[in-house]
Amino acid sequence: MRKPFVAGNWKMNLNLAECRELMAALRKGLPDPLPIDVAVCPPFALLFPIQGEVDGTPIKVGAQNLYPEPKGAFTGEISATQIRDTGATYVIIGHSERRHVIGETGELIGRKIPAALKAGLEVIYCVGEKIEEREAGRTEAVVAEQLNHGLTEDLDWSRLTIAYEPVWAIGTGKTATPEQAQEAHAFIRQELAARYNAEWADRIRIQYGGSVKPDNADALMSCPDVDGALVGGASLKAGDFLGIIQAAIRSAS
Ligand code: 13P
Image (tube, rainbow, N blue to C red; front, top):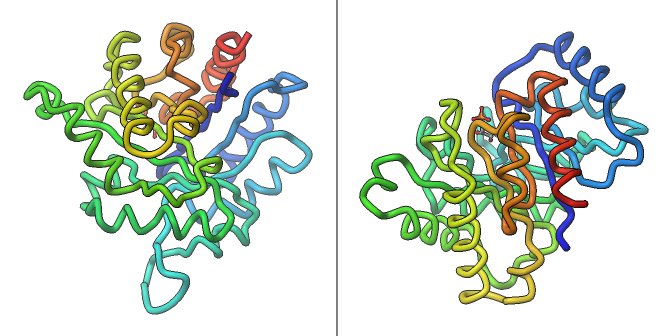
């Protein structure tokens, strides 16, 4: 049985005062004990202060990106060890906004995963197709290629989570149906088993991301291969994020 994992990707939202307010509400509403894993991923500048906000709680902190080199002349970038130094334990890699808005290549993204793992971080690796790719029947080919760029057999798979985030469902309010999500998640698991290691494919957690809300979270997370959620907009509101966490807890029982 895989332990559900819900992570909030705050993207480039919230100032310090708003974050503190959100964290206070999360601390207050979080079930105790917490039978699932929960993380929040603020922008880089807020990693340190948010670490202070989660002390003494089971909430973990993650960054939204990193640069794969250990140090050097890479203005505006941040290394895996610098992220680790803030106390953060997770990093999101390959988010579709990095791929399609910022223009990162699969090759660059692929170099980030070993760098993150080497520094002791846990990785949430995002994959997902654009609407035109889905409509052209290329969903599986696109996802398989992204897995191929990011993953190799020698990685420490126990510190990897995959997030399936169909690009057309991100920030659009248009969620994948539970059937579409299950189909993609099962495909990812089969691919990992066929290409790498069946045991790790069975153990790895695959989150769904894309317009997850409290009212669709139960249906999505009750799918057998959906092991939690990577939440954007709804993670900015304590009530919604807590509602999704409750749905993940229900899916585990
Ligand atoms: P939304 O939940 O706002 O659709 O964003 C999903 C996402 O991109 C999480 O990484």
